[in-house]
Image (cartoon, rainbow, N blue to C red):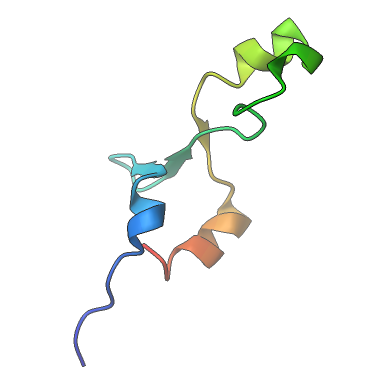
Length: 62
């Protein structure tokens, strides 16, 4: 059986750290920014880690 291909949409959206964790961007950033608080916009700039329960679903896509 050949190897499974990585989903090309996913590989553009995540980064794998050296320890094997998954970094991802935050949601609610694309538009309607005037309705969001400054704190919400500032804190969503940083990348966040994918939770362990979500990682199980993502593992077959990576």
